[in-house]
Length: 304
Image (cartoon, rainbow, N blue to C red; front, side, top):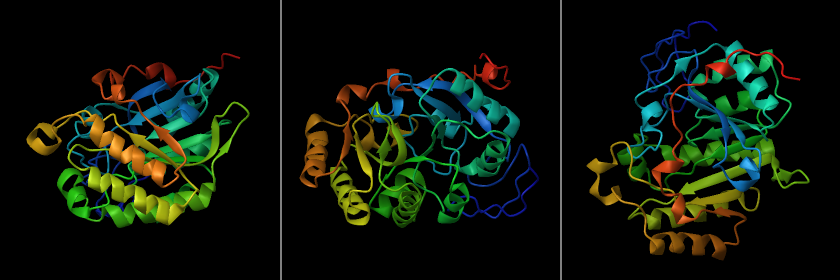
């Protein structure tokens, strides 16, 4: 990787210089991936985590600034360890050796150069999943075509005023609509193996926010109108006030059963295929421990 003098990897299109270890753009990251956790992850949707887990690689930094982010420690505080594309490729190999169902790249969009380079070094033999905020450029997604088998985007807001207030993105809604359309174009309808584990497809997550069920209902309407039955929808009730949510009284609590039921009922009315969470998932115990104790994954020695 070389220095980029005019970065436009994400929708912010900062146009700043990024060196290997530093950058002055919105993500505040350089080009070398910074990783906070690597390992099997069992808390994704059932068709993703299955029985053996999803091979998750959590990247530091983010192209959004969600005030309620459960991964605030890494997305905003940038906890993590710098690695090379070669070490990232080794992570794929090691996760494969552990028998996980897929390689799960969590918030990797600002490290797209390193991700593409890592695939040239080693192409995983299992499906690769791109776990995203939904705030992506179509141009960057097209560069990933052929490397990504499963897309797992959020659809956070149908109202850009909320997107700006809570995530610092004034154009989130139209950007996410276009991005997910490109994801669906690449993957087509969901495809599963004989055990019900997804091999290809797009799963759209809708996180229900307290006091904002109206927005969640509108999101579901938009998904249905734009993508029909080509996506799975995951309605999520796991919201737990994190990060700086305490500064916003209207979202500084968990959602109620009534709020969640209203959104789930609407998904059923729209005849959407997908998943719903138990509200018991709204607990800090489900937030991964970002202790950066993943160095064993960065080198590779075959165990087979």
